[in-house]
Image 1 (cartoon, rainbow, N blue to C red):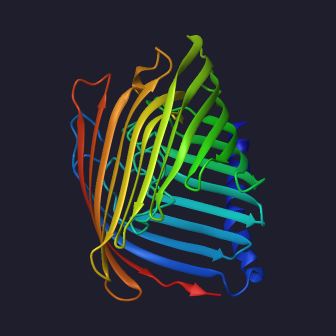
Image 2: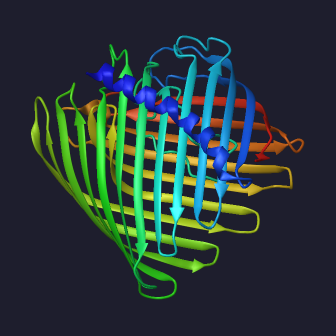
Length: 403
């Protein structure tokens, strides 16, 4: 049954780039296509992020990508297809030599409404994940991946995501939104791991009410359903959050939300309920040369551990232009995950990732990227913390072309 689902998803995902290219015939001259190719060398002294005895890893990689974008008053289109291939073995940590990603976002805007559908397919591993954003996309938020560092083995992960949503503005003060999310993760060869295939579905509704020119009250109701059939683990949860969205100026804004979640779970060994506080703080600030953005809060996430975890998370992103051709960025991600169940201690851990990066546009089409990544993880089941230091250097060619 899983094999049939995997085949169906694979065929559907392979159709996405074809559909994207077919649509170029009708999108007109405003469509921008950006092919790019990169060569990257890297060194990591603990790629598996393990406390056990290990060897350093050095390797080289070839990355090819194709981006599509079109922006008009009535619609938005953004798409990317990416292939990463290891040119050298990279040691025993990287058993899988290639990663693939396809992502597409389409939005149709009316005078008072907006329809959007976002979807992606990625084939990677937790040890060597592929993201919608890469080091050259420093102006965007990093992807959420609550499973970073979860296992030491290079296990294939096939992840399929689709998120349709709709919003409508009834008046200058009142706006509503609704959406659905489907997230399916299928692993390959999970022997000697604690990974389980899972499906996560969510349904949400939001209400916005403007009380002043700069302030809006926000209310979010969300329902989630998590299923890990092989592990016989089911979760059904609902949450309600109320918040305030404030614009401090034309270049600074913030959003604070607080609420409550209730979850009922069933597993092979333990059944029960979990309730607790949820909170989110988001802030963004822009200056002439710099953009800051950050998120701090407590949320619930689906995990490849066959579980739903409560995560206290900090995400910080900064990008600054040092000159017309050089820019610096810094990304920080830290989280503390805790399983809702008492019989899954492997999911309980603390994780930190810090990545400063430097990008130099040598010519109009050529650029050089260099970044350092520090990672640290401590599991409740380990007495010691694992640390990793990695250095990456890449050269990239990208040439946007309007059609």
